Structures are given as structure tokens and as C-alpha cells.
Image (tube, rainbow, N blue to C red; front, side, top):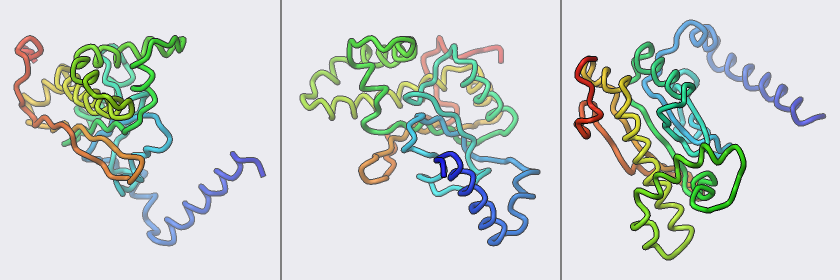
Length: 210
């Protein structure tokens, strides 16, 4: 049996188990999507949002990219964000990184990775902002892990700067934004940064005609 065929068999077994436990599960899911959370996570296959939070399908709206970035020119991310905030009206946005992130580690080097350089450049900016603190850490793994935390913090700030979030804060007083980091070694999520709805940021980012 080919590996992809095993995935299809596992899917059938999963669907059968769901129906046995709850005969109306898929009918409800097909007609309703009311997640409370938008999850912006890393594409790393070891960090699946639903599994590590113990949530069910329909409870978290998910966007993933390399190193859980919020880039103001990324139309994919911005489309997900607008839909989650304006249509689904999520109450919380979670930016979740993970310790030992390969994208963050790569951005801290001078290696040429080809097309991904354009994406890593955004992480390099985070390193430049916090270079003094990060370089003062002597252990390389600890440097990367601190950068992971700082990167999450910067992405939370990037969310707060968007007109989508600014507008929702003015009109609805949500969503709250949370910065978390997942530890692959023990499976525990560590909160590292938070911005409550309506938090004032540098006035240059606050829109007055939304």
C-alpha cells in the first residue's frame, strides 16, 4: 500500500468513528462555522493547531505559513484575517510559534536559500530590531528560542497595525491578540505576549477614518 493510500484509509476510519460517536456531527459541521479563534501558526508539520489545543473541527480558523509571519503585503494572510474578523467575528487571534523554528534559525544566518530569502527577510528585520538582546545570549539554541519569542511578539504587533484589526477594535472591541510559543519537547504552549482589544499603539498606525 502506498503512503498516500493509507491516508485515505485513515480518513474513512476517522469519519466512521465520528459518526458512531455522534451521528449528526458532519451535518452540523456542514451547516455552521462559528470559530472563536483565528490561529496564525507555523507550517511545521509537528505543530497542528487542533491537536495541540485539543479542539474539534469548526472551533479554530487556521492560517499557517513559514515562521507564523504577519506580513503587510501578504494578500493570503490579509484575506484570511479579514474573513475571520469581519465575517466570522472571531474573539481572539493567536499567533503561535514554536521553539527551534527552522525559519527563524535560517533567517539568523547569511546563507542564500533562494526564493525563500524574500520571506526570511521579514524575520531578519525582527533580528535587527532586537540584535543587542539576542547577541548577548551565548548559547545558540537559546538565541534561536528567544528570537522565536520576539518574532511572535512582532507579529502580534503587526496584526494590531492592520486597518482590519484597528477597525474591529473601534467598532466591536475585539479581537484580543495572543502571542504563544509551543515547545516540541514537552508539548506545552507558553504565552509570551498579549494585546487586548483597543490597546493603543504608536499613533502613526492608528487610523482615524475607519
